[in-house]
Amino acid sequence: MKTVITSGKTVEEAVQKVVNEYSLLDDEYEIDVVEKGSKGFLGMFSKMAEVKVIFKKKYFERKLSKFLEVILEKTGGVDLISIDSDGKTYFVTLGGTGVGKLIGKHGKTLGALQHISSIFLNRLSDVKLNVVIDAGNYRERRKKQLEIIAKDAIRQVLRSKRKVTLDPMFPFERRIVHEIVKKYKRVASYSVGVEPYRRVVIEYVPGKTRKGVKR
Image (cartoon, rainbow, N blue to C red; front, side, top):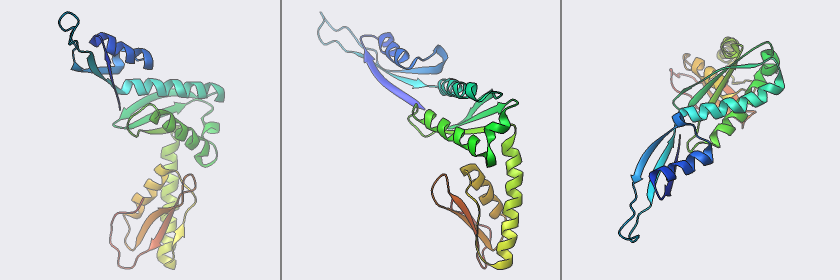
């Protein structure tokens, strides 16, 4: 996720520089010694120690947890239940009596929180990371809604043979719609526009068999 290369008179000194700068805890990093360093002879020809400090997932989970806790303190009634990671994706689960207000109309507030959380985490990383936030099992409920919306649109396209443009959606919502469309013949889907107004277009494709889509 992130690697910092640094040097010092000793390996310990080099590592400590990074630990202090990033406030790393003992179980949040690994060390790869590039050069152990040496004092040389009579102070001559000495070599500095050089190390790679590799940040582990625990570091990003802790940072993301603290970031969200500060925000959630101001919302009231929302608790951080868990943060798990799989590869480059961090899954956040929220609960509490205030999740309805946090989700917002059509999930817009929840989407905004997810967006700024992703920005925050990516500022700490060398590679692109994703944050997926679920509150009150909203994603599962939204998935069922999207299945209804997508199937209604597909029926309309097949009947009229004209394309249908859906309302703006978040990336995870568009992926669900695209996957549904892939199961049907004679229809295809793609996305248009820029975030946060990007939409899915479903269109009629004569003779089309099941195939991939443009996301």
